[in-house]
Image (tube, rainbow, N blue to C red; front, side, top):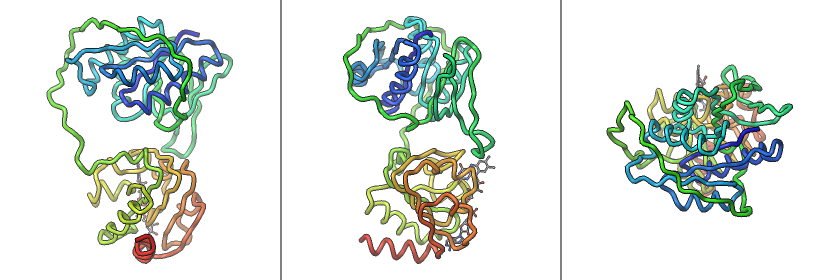
Length: 311
Ligand SMILES: Cc1cc2nc3c(=O)[nH]c(=O)nc-3n(C[C@H](O)[C@H](O)[C@H](O)COP(=O)(O)OP(=O)(O)OC[C@H]3O[C@@H](n4cnc5c(N)ncnc54)[C@H](O)[C@@H]3O)c2cc1C
C-alpha cells in the first residue's frame, strides 16, 4: 500500500491521526508521513510519536486559516512523500480542507469518519448515516484517498522512536481566492469536544436556570453545551455549543442532559459519552433509552438543587 500523510493544525488531532495511520502501517507496512506548517513544536512532537518522516513547511506568509493555500501545501507534501492516502481532522477547518484537497488531487473523499478497518488490504471507513440512525461502512475506490477523521475517534499516539524531519520548500501556486480577514473566535467560545464533563441543556430548560447549569459545569470542571434549537431558535448560545449531527460529536466522561427529548440528530453527538445522566419530565422521553441514569423530574428543581449541593 502507498504511504499515508497526516495533517492537522491542531496538535491533539494530529496525534490521533498518527494512531489511525499506525493501523495502516501495522496492516500494510505503509510509511507514515506527517506535515506541519509554521509549527516547529508540533513537528518535534510528531517526529517523536511514530511518524517516519515529518515534513516541515515554514513560511510566515502562509495563514493556517487559508484552506486554499494549505490544500496546495498538503498536495505538494503528499507528492513528495509519495502518499496516496491523506488523513485530516474532521473539524470545521479540516472538512473544508478535505473538499479542496480532494478536488485538487482528484481523490475520493470521506469526512466525519469515526472508525477505520482494513478489509483485505482495503480501507473501510465507518460513518454515521441516515441522520445518525445507522452506521455505514464505506470504501473509497479511487487510488488517491482523502479521509477526514472525527476528533476523538482514536487515542492520541504516545511517544515512539524518533523519525526524520525534513524541511519542505513549497512552490507557491497561482491562487484564485484571497484570504481577506481572520477573526478570532468570540470570547465565550469553548471547545466542548475536549470537555470531560458536559452539562447539556435542551428546550425543557428555562433561560433563568442557565446560571445553575453553568455553576454545575464549573463545579465539576466541565462545560455547558446545548441541543440545536437552544442555539439556533432561542439564541441562548452560539452554534459552537450544539451537540449533534449539525453540531459537535463529543465523548465526555460524564454528560448530564436536561430537558432534551433525545431525537437521533441530537443523540448521535453524545451517545459515546462514558456515563449519561438524563433529566426529563416525560417518563417516555427518547433520551432515557440512551441514559445510564434516568431521572423523571422538572429540570428547574434538579438544576437548582444540584447547583446548591455542589456550591
Ligand atoms: C437535518 C437535521 C439536523 C439536526 N441536527 C441537530 C443537532 O445537531 N443537534 C440537535 O440537538 N438537534 C438537531 N436537530 C433537531 C432535532 O431533530 C430535535 O428537534 C432537537 O434535538 C430537539 O431539541 P430539544 O430536545 O432541546 O427540544 P424538544 O424536542 O422540544 O424537547 C424538549 C424536552 O424537554 C422536556 N421538558 C420540557 N419541560 C421540561 C421540564 N420542565 N423539565 C424537564 N424536562 C422538560 C420535554 O419532555 C422534551 O422531551 C436536527 C434536525 C434535522 C432535521
